[in-house]
Amino acid sequence: MYNLLNDLSIVEVSSFVASPTAGLYCAQMGAEVIRVDHKAGGLDYDRYMLTNEGRSLSWENLNRAKKSVALDLRSGEGRELCVELAAKTGQCITNLPEKSFLSHAAIKAAQAEGTPDLTSVRIMGWHDGRQAMDFTVNAASGYPLMTGPEDWDMQTAPPVNQVLPAWDFITGAYCAFAMLAALRHRDATGLGSEVRVPLGDVAIGTTANAGLMAEMLYRGSDRERLGNAIWGAFGRDFRSKDGVRFMVAALTAKQWAGLVEAFGVTLPISKLEAEVGVTFTDGDDPRFKHRHALFDIFQNVAGSHDYKALESLMAAHGCTFEKYRTAHEAAHDPALVADNPMFGPSPANPSGFEYPAPRSFANIPAQQAADPAPAPYLGQHSEEVLAERLGLSSGAIAKLVDAGTVALSDKDR
Image 1 (cartoon, one colour):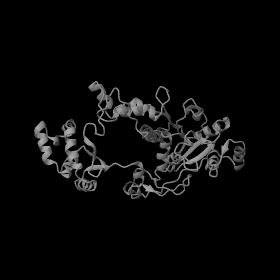
Image 2 (cartoon, rainbow, N blue to C red):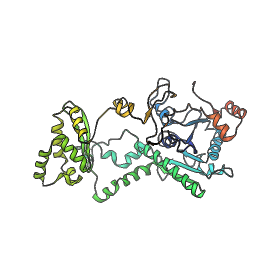
Image 3 (tube, one colour):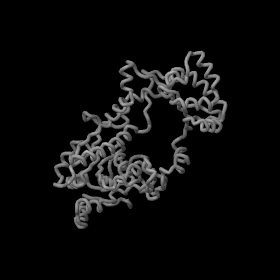
Image 4 (cartoon, helix red, strand yellow):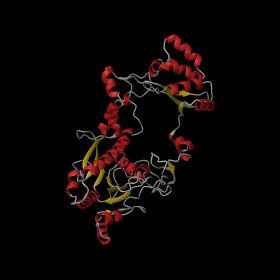
C-alpha cells in the first residue's frame, strides 16, 4: 500500500466484484475507504468459497485495507445514516440502483454548506437500466463463441465461458480511474460529478477499443475459432517430450528471431518460405496465415525435448513463453508469489487463515510499499466512523446499537 491518496476518503456501498474492486484499488493507494454493508452482511458477504469458520475468501480479499460500517439498511434510520455518511464524506462508490435510497440526488440533498460538492461513481448493468452481471454481458460480447477448438463449428458448437470475471475487474479499475478523474475536475472547478459506468458498456466498449467491432463490420462475418492460437500473430501452446504444456508468443521481430534460434528451426522454416513464397520475418501476417505449417515445425522440436531443456533454450534467446500451471500450482510457485515483492504477509485475516496477499500492482521504486492490510470484520469500524464522521457520541451510538440500527464487529460471531 502507498500513501498517494491518504487525504481522500470514500464511502463504498457495494457487493460482488466490480464495485469492491474500485474501492480496493483506491485503498491500496492510501485512500480511506469506508465500506457500508447491511448489518448481516451484503449480498456477497457469504460468497463461495467459505472457510471452515464460515468466512468468505472472496469478500476477505476484495475488502482489504478498508474500514467496515454495518447498518440496518432495511430500516429508514439506517439508510439515513448511510446517506448522511456519504454526504459528509463527499465521495461515494456504489452499485446500488440510481432509484435506490442512495441516489446521487438524495446524497447531494443531504450535503451541508461547505461540504465538497458530491462526486459519486455508480456501477450499473446496461445503459438502458437492464440488469447485468459479468457472466451475462460476456455472453453478449461475442467472445465465448470465438473460444474453443479450431474444428468446432461456429453455429452448432457450444459457447465457452471464461472463468475469470474479467468485465467486473475491468469495470472496477475503470471506476477507480473515473473517481480520480472526477475529483481532479472538482479540484479545478469546485464542481462534483455524478458518474455512471454500465458494466455492459465496459464490455462492448472494450471490444470496440480492441478493434473487434470494426473487424466484424469490415469483414462481414464472424471470426473463426482458433483453439489456443493467438489471433493475427504467431503463438500457441506446445507440448514437450515429457508432457509439459507451455505457451509461446512471437509478436515482434526480436521475439520471432529468438524463437527460431531457440528451437533451431532455421532450415525447415527457410524451406517452408520457399514452398509458400513468403518471408516470415516480414511480420505477423505471413506467420498467422501459415500458422498450421509453422506449428507443426515447432511442435516437432518441442516433442523431442524435455521441457527443462526447452525452457533453458528459450530463456537464453529472450523468448516470450510460460509453462501452464494449475491455479493450485500458481499459488505455490515461488517465482509468482513467494519471491515476488508484490506479495506480503497477511496474518490477521478475519478467516484466521494466514497466506500471502498482494500489495498495489503498481510499484514505486522510490517508496517502500507497506505490508498488505487485512480486510475488516463486518462492522469493525462502525463506532469509530460514526463518531468521527457524523459526530455521534458514544451514548448515541450505543442507543443505535441497542435499537439494531448499527452493528459492531462480528469477530466473535
